[in-house]
Length: 111
Length: 117
Image (cartoon, rainbow over all chains, first blue to last red):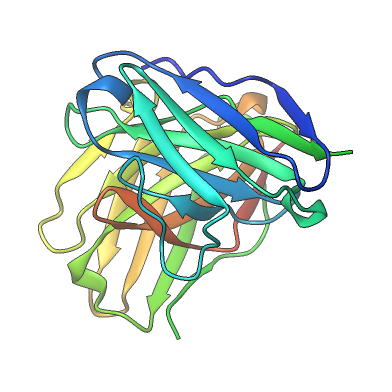
């Protein structure tokens, strides 16, 4: 499985909204309601912020939202805050013997 | 408190094997799969493999299928990943993570593996 495609970087000003795309195929993103998103600070373990395409784990701010259209999933961060500066990765179930594939990752800068 | 505690730094020669451990606590170990994810320096996350501690069922990313061995010990609630025939491209931070349904909700702190001659 090839990595899902994400933009290398996205930036925004505090208070703005940004959207990160994650493009796969019908064998992963488009084939299942199993896209998740992770936030990662440098040198730290990732943290789940979206699962099952659109759901937020307990304790995750509602400024984070997920959506999907066809083979592309989206993460939107609204009301951008300085603390949102991090790397973001999508991940999708990829079928087979319960395998998964991550996206290439997007660095978010808050200017 | 739920936790995945991983083994410490490993330094290995090319061609050698490395075994990383991941001890689970604070939840029922056999209820959820353990996944292994790695991250090379400055690179993105890469899903490697997963194991069901209850059944032993395994799944692998194709590129690791012939080099990865995974085991679990339910008596010590520990999962282990062995990666063989190491090369410099295997230098990375290796994470274990709990699979809660379709996503990874609990992560270990990571084990740094350096492959160098």
